[in-house]
Image (cartoon, rainbow, N blue to C red):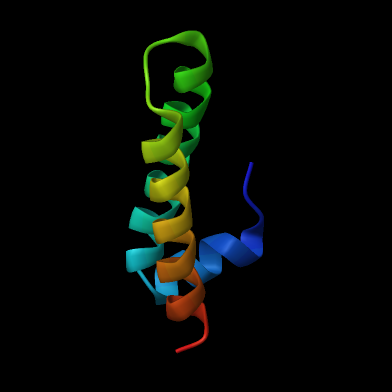
Length: 60
């Protein structure tokens, strides 16, 4: 469960919802790569990309 602070930030910056779902998708792909139905590299790349985007949104 995400904190109330994150919920407030999402209301102020709606793009953070995309960041949250991108991070979740990247994590699922990474874990899926270990069990054979995803890509570890693509999952890590997605998590890094969405993480950088989220960091830039928060510091803007």
